Image (cartoon, rainbow, N blue to C red; front, side, top):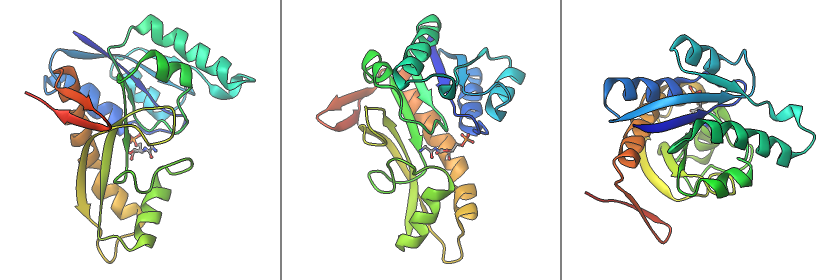
Length: 209
Ligand code: GAR
C-alpha cells in the first residue's frame, strides 16, 4: 500500500482532501491509503472532516514557532512518523518549508485553482485567483496539479484541466464550477503517481505506460 499524507491550512474546508480519501477507499486510486492529515488548527473544518472519516490527524501550527525553520523541523518530525510515499497539499496556503521539499523530492503534489504559470505566486489563493482571472479578461481558466519545489506554484506541471470563463461569472461562481474539476484532476494525478507513471524530463512531466 502506498502511504499518502495530506497537508491542509487552518481555514481549509477540505473538499480536495475528502475527494482523495474517498478515491483511495473506492479503489479509484489503487493500493493507496491516506494515513494522516496534518493541519494548523484542531478546529479546522478539514481536520474535523478527516476525523469524521476515521483518518488520523495531527496539528502543527506554524504560528506557534518563532522561526520558520522550527516549524519545518516540527512538520518534518510528524511526516517522518507517517512515512509517506506521497504528500498532497490540498488548500495548503503557505510556502512549504524547504527542508520538507528537499527531503521528499518529486513526492509532493499541490493543486492550484488556475492554469499555472499564470495567476500563481505568494498571496494567490482561493477567490483572489478567480478575481484575477476575471479581471484579466481570459476566456478560459482551470486547475493545475504540480510537483512542489521551493517557491510558490513553480514546480513541474503534472496535469491541467480547463473550463470556460462566462461573461457573468463572479469569483464565487467560477470557484464553484471549477471545484469538481479540481477533485477529478487531483484524483487522476495521484493515481498516475501511485501507478509510477510520471517521469520528469527537464521541466516537463511525461505520463508513461
Ligand atoms: C482549492 O480550490 C485549491 O485549489 C486552493 O484552495 C482550495 C481548497 O479547497 N488552493 C490554492 O489556492 C493554493 N494556492 P478545499 O479545502 O475544499 O480543497
